[in-house]
Length: 102
Image 1 (cartoon, helix red, strand yellow):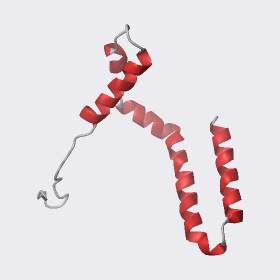
Image 2 (cartoon, one colour; image 1 turned 45 degrees about the vertical axis):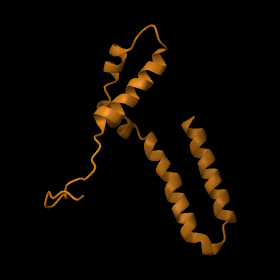
Image 3 (cartoon, helix red, strand yellow; image 1 turned 90 degrees about the vertical axis):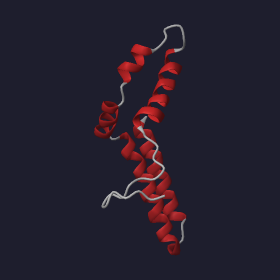
Image 4 (cartoon, helix red, strand yellow; image 1 turned 30 degrees about the vertical axis):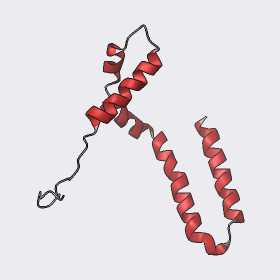
């Protein structure tokens, strides 16, 4: 599947290159950059690092066997992501002087 996506993306970029006028080179460079940036999400090392942070086993342990397992895991992942992994900060302190801006 990944090979198919990669090949289609490469074909699409080649087609775009042949159709875009010379004066649109900056646009083409941005498009290429964004298009190739998608592949970093398929990097096995980055995926492994992300999975190391997510307490997947805890989600399975807490799942109710009476409900749909996939739905329960997704809901637990969403809750964890919004309430445990990230912390909302209204006024972050300055990294240099630690003063809070309001």
